[in-house]
Amino acid sequence: MTTITTPPGHQRILTGDRPTGPLHIGHLFATLRSRVAFQDNGIDTMILIADLQVITDRDAIGDVRSAALGQVADYLATGIDPTRSTIFAHSAVPAIGQLTLPFLSLVSDAELRRNPTVKDELAATDGRPLSGLLLTYPVHQAADILAVHGNVVPVGRDQLPHLEQARVIARRFNARYGADYFTEPEALLTRAPVVPGLDGRKMSTSRGNGLELGMTADATAARIRKARTDSQRRITFDPDRRPEVSSMLRITALFTGETPEQVAERIGDGGAAALKRELTTAVNDGLAEHRRRRAEFAADPAYLRDVVRAGNARAAALADRTLADVFELMGMSY
Ligand code: TRP
Image (tube, rainbow, N blue to C red; front, side, top):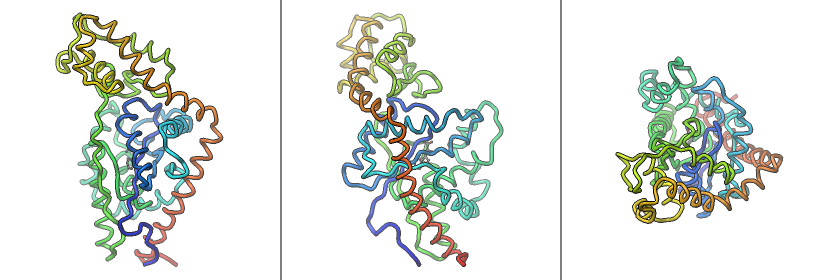
């Protein structure tokens, strides 16, 4: 064997986001803060701008670069320190793509077609045919994890099938080539609260029910003002029967550190108008510092690109070494 890229016991976190649009408060509570905590605990943290996943399920990909740089501004504003953590992009690390080919030989098409997350994503495309990339992107994702020997992957539930796929690929590669080379990555299920959108459904930019981190305070107020509620005057926390009101209570509570019931109690007979005022203040106060820092970073796209380029170089060095090891083990080094 040639090189060992992760010393025994070394933890390397790999996680990432698709640059499909602005990050919202769901990302802040679900993932961004915990990444900063990993970094601050001295864990090697790598954050992937999963740009090659943007083309899995959509034709209109938008301005990927500005979405990616906005994402980086949010990472930095949350406290990701590019001298300690690595931010990099799929497209800048060709070895990830190359590693995908031998990995594809280790999975069956039936296995790929069974992947529940891929099925859900296909179902959400309104009849678009299953593209070869959508079918196989979990294998590409296994390559992005294993290329840098990420061994801890903090994820939401929807990503568990992909993590399992990566573990299977690591195992099968080791078995087929008689090597103890890849470590099976461990999923770290984030216990963070799922932040509902203003309408009670999952928060998502495309549904227009989200509150983006980079919005101005005025735009936040306007979005909340326009959101639907119900006609019951007394505010109560009742997620089944009052999804909109309950979501607003939940979001307020996340920022104020209360329980949703406590917020409801406080508002009482104040009605939806008072609830919306509370929510607007909680979000705008809670995000003021993040937004100030974000705006500073966003004003300097050259710096943001430097951050990504430095991350790309580090990730590419790791991935190139992995690819060389893999070809060596496969008897394909000349
Ligand atoms: N599939 C993830 C998402 O859509 C993004 C992603 C790509 C990822 N590669 C990853 C997440 C590796 C964790 C680890 O959000």
